[in-house]
Image (cartoon, rainbow, N blue to C red; front, side, top):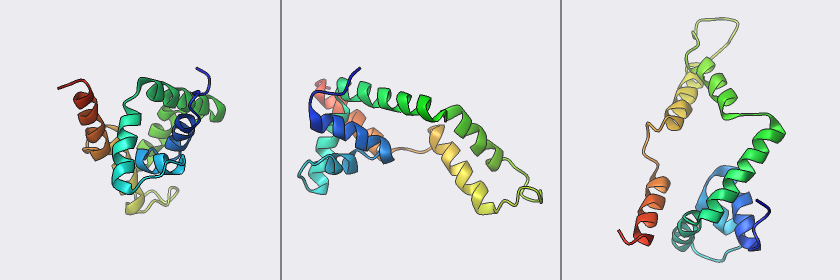
Length: 129
């Protein structure tokens, strides 16, 4: 899929993959809005199939370019999360393990993502549910 014809939509997608925060991406893309309006409007953008497809494509391109895959990141996080903290060769702190475990838990969906829930709610509203 080539770049989106709507320049602000394309910029929104590029900005979104920086930190995966739709509200901030919306504002960085040049839309003029307060935080509440930006949150609402960014959710509407995220519900658009062409936006979702473009974000997936950009992420895939980045994965190929950097050769950093989700699997590699998860494997490294798992090594840290489940390492023996008394192993002198690793020099891990308990905080390192907690951070790694937290990130793995987020990836596995063990936490409720407020932004994702809001997006799902908006999708259902758009479908008339």
